[in-house]
Length: 139
View: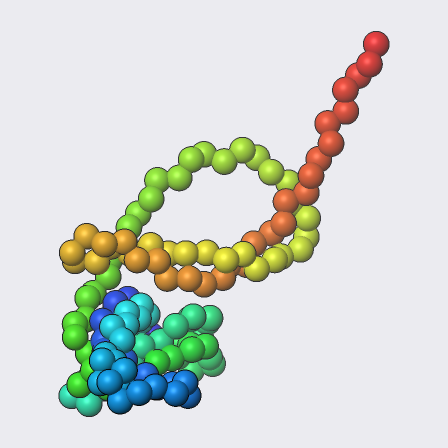
């Protein structure tokens, strides 16, 4: 199975509009600076392919991706490789769970080479906690 590398790609995006504008207004328009974070699937001299939302593997042990983005290489300003940040967690108290799973949104944080923190969003299946009422003995 291929190891996926998380990256942030900074690129210039084209844009258009259906709003009427004068020639002077059109001459002032600039391309939009865009940043995309995802897994680097392929990079060659023509394009960069990013994948998002990994959700398992198929029977051939190939990673399944729900979304992707193809960016022409001529529009790319820079590519930053991201590294995972390990966060210490507090100890959790004991909870009881019902036999039911729900989808919970999660964010995995990565630190770029220039120190910025970037989060990749996804979902995680979790078990829903049961609320337990404590009884008090009344005398």
